[in-house]
Length: 578
Image (cartoon, rainbow, N blue to C red; front, side, top):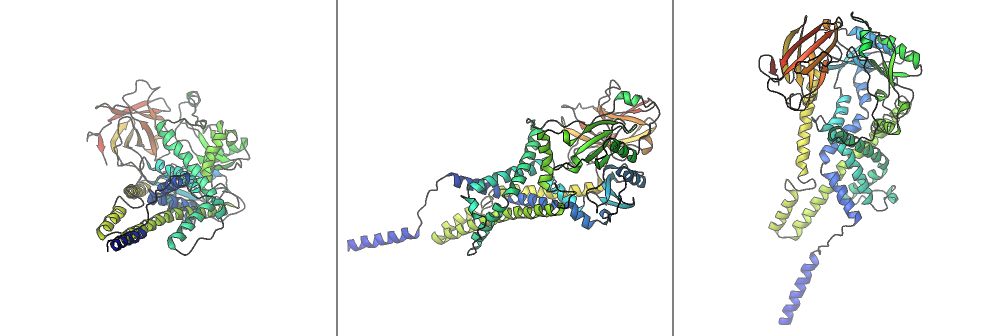
């Protein structure tokens, strides 16, 4: 009998052990570590990364989206185009109460009208459009069109301060995820033509994920390298003073005091856009003018941006010619042909990342559609990666529930599905918080497009300065206009309201904290087109309690006028308008 009991006990023990899989300790080899890295990078910020990828995919076709939606942008190509400078002159004549800036000729887009930016009466930003073939003004559109909204969303997530750095970080994560994924997939080159298995949903999605990744290797490298490069630039170079491997680009020159003094004491007349364009073409007849930017103050040259046919350059960040707006003399050039290898590499990142390196050629749309397709695959990989892990987690939970008593199964399931558990873990909260921040930033951005920054931040009441009335307001930034604008050691922005009739007589306007001791050091220069005068102001490390902003105006006739406001709100001269 005892022998029978022993045999029965052994049989039960064997039966029990046969239903339980022995716990195998995983070996942390290179392949498994690479898999863990790939899963961690791809999972923890999946929601926000999907938003970045989806918005970037759509942003590739941002111009085409706007062109379809905005009739003001569409024109019918004809044999001859008007001179870009003449177009700017005609557009400025149609908007005499607004200063135009960043005029874009769109010569490489024959079906698209030329345009310039201006600030409307409410302080909002708008674009004015003109037909480059007959000079007909087509009307104006808001700053945040659908296409630009997608571009800004992809570039900054509309998150104050950290947005651009965060987006750039995803470029590095993409590169890490690609390398780790290839290391986790042994002999991956054999599977380019392998058909996904269809017997199981999770297995099918996993195979599809791998197949999309394999065919996207070249694209992932472009996005990963360019994004990693920008991540090093922002935040490391920009905020943390990391060494910059790119040689400094030539700075924009200013007209010398001697040049301005030679103009005399009467208000000098400036050349027209057409005359500026002619002056550039007289020296560089082969230059295609893509952008004209009129002077923003008396010592500012006219900036003409264009191309000599170089590849892998953004048309708006290409060769620049700086022209004296009073004489037409070329003051300085910044030509792509003179760039170093690192400068060319730096400038090539934009067109490679966004797929617009073929603009102006017949293959432009085909290249952009290719970028759009592979961007869609990248977005799909982010989504399918999350789905694979969710299905794997749920499968594990079902196995646990089937093989353990009810309460133990419930406990283990709770550890899987609790708010800080699951594939994303506690990072799900980071995703949710960032998405909330994106939503708030989007609402702020939409208000900026229509309201601008007039009246935001601290408001400095209207004061008499010479024969004119001026006022200004300080704001922390476009997306930070509801934050405190005056903080020790930080930068702030001053928007200055000056009557249009005063500008021809004004030679310079400056602002500083503390009354200037000499006219040679009056402070930070106030600049900008009509209706958008502003200054980017560096605040001292410690602002005194009774500190005042001093504004100094110097006229062409030599008169000096000054006025001041308390830096901090006193509810008499300075007010908190937030």
